Length: 627
Image 1 (cartoon, rainbow, N blue to C red):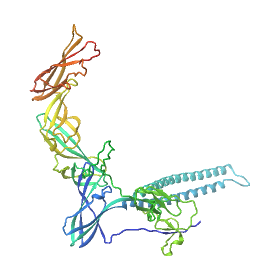
Image 2 (spheres, rainbow, N blue to C red):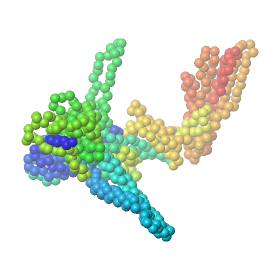
Image 3 (cartoon, one colour):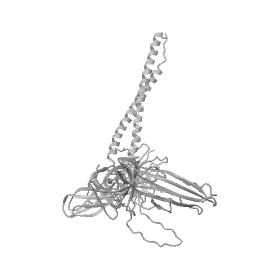
Image 4 (tube, rainbow, N blue to C red):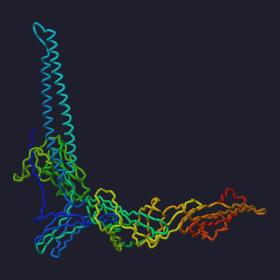
């Protein structure tokens, strides 16, 4: 059955009223925040007197359109308007690859046809030989003749089968390659069109200007930096070295090549508006605190390709948004089957419709590949106008374009770095005066910023009741002057890696305490020297006395300060009494039983302190463990 499809393709292209000059720009500076980044691009442009429309393309599709700013370094130029636009463009590399693959597919289809023809000839030859295998004659045949005939049949049939086997192998290789190319074509069709981001600006110039510098800035979401540190201590008589570094990563779809990098502690997502008070009532009715969140902007552009079951593009397919409005929002696919639809509401569905195929209703997406199934119902002659359809009688002859069937055309497809540190009310910025490259791959790239040499207050601390280890601690005074952010630090003591710790400065504290590591050169030993239990002869009381000696030796060639901590038990029962008998001049905290000795030890000096306490409790108390 023949069907005549009269189709009017309505492809709407928007052009500016004046010529738009496309200019290329380069990323020169990037300010990376703890979350997000400010991109600075520069470009040179020639301007005519009067209005000039320029387009800066190939920008990140993850940029925040509200953050776009443009500047021109010439007072004779006025920026009339700046607009951002998401669009869809063909990928030239994918298109070239698809064209190359199409040629190869055509060659394979021809080769498969020739090989099948060769197989058919061999089959016919085999049938001819077999049809003449019966030997006839009035006189019969001799045994010699019979042997010759058998040899002939065997030779010919074997030759045919070998030829068929060879052709079948070649056919299999060609068909396998063709199937792979068809699958690759489906994948490439989805990649053929890609979302792009561009800025359009109208510049008014008082005179003709050559080489005006244009600066474009915008925020992107998918970028961040995290601080990390190295803490190096040679000995307690040397300054503490704090190496301040950063790990930078980004997936903004733009590679940062040889850019000047600035790391900022600021947060562009913070809302600078002062919160307003709401009425507070009792009983409470609850209050919702709204917090601003900064998320990747949505372009609300659905785009992709429409093909049939064989992967052939369908031109003129209607694509429209199901928004319930009388005037539909729609478009039509072009001769490559490509479509682009700017959605009014991303939550709506889209409908794809073409004569002779079943309609499809889908959720909008990017890089869509829609395969339409042929309709089994009989087709009536209809007219497709732009998008949607109308009865034939309602369309004038002048507006009709005849199109029979689907389109027959196929797609032709370190050391300290030079650094400037600037403080502001809300952030600290580290401007590295050298070029860095950070690809858009999400991996972390290290950037060493600077090294502080800090006169830290060192002291040793030991808790021999729990461990024999002695720990070196460093107090960093006036920590706010270093603009430290919370992060992980690697600890090195006397060039030996001690492990990791967390640098977590608090705004309310002036001093930062860092546990550098253990030091076996400060030896500490705790041993019991006296344990006495006395029971009253007349009364009902038991008295237990415990005594411990703590010996500290400084094996270093220089003097050190050591803090020794111990404790005695605190009674939580009224019939148990605990008293501290001897503490060798320690500082005592009666509330929790903590005793602390602050000792100054000269080289090779040994000191011993004593802790003695007494416990009294009733005789009838059982299972009272006293250590």
